[in-house]
Image 1 (cartoon, rainbow, N blue to C red):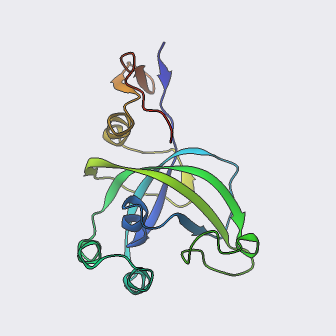
Image 2 (spheres, rainbow, N blue to C red):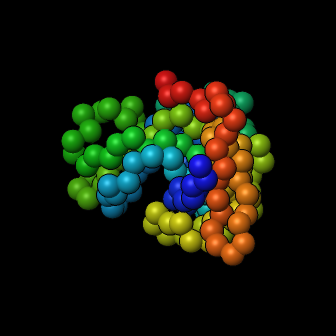
Length: 172
């Protein structure tokens, strides 16, 4: 069986993208909601918000991780599992200090970050998107999850071939 690999991507400013991919930050703050749940490719944008390092320090991120975050990678970094979204006012501190308060703010709850072996260069877009994600990012996502190998079928979309029997990791 061969199926399309069409996971969406989300561009996130640094150091927030690095904090998500490092497993330190379990939610992403957005001013819009989504019904999507599942794998989400994280793209690190060009803008760096220095105050994010201070927030990370205040929330106990170790010094060596902070030093790495101060030299951020750009492009497609990896993927996370988007498991839930909720309005900020309904959070009840479930997001452990990473969730921003406010009307019209939504916390996107993520887990299970999987870094790509190397960042994949590429442009990001606003919103949750599937357009112009480089083939190399989908190939890295397939490698990071162990769900199969990516191959190009001409013409048409990138296709994902199934992994060998027993290669698909189980959720924890």
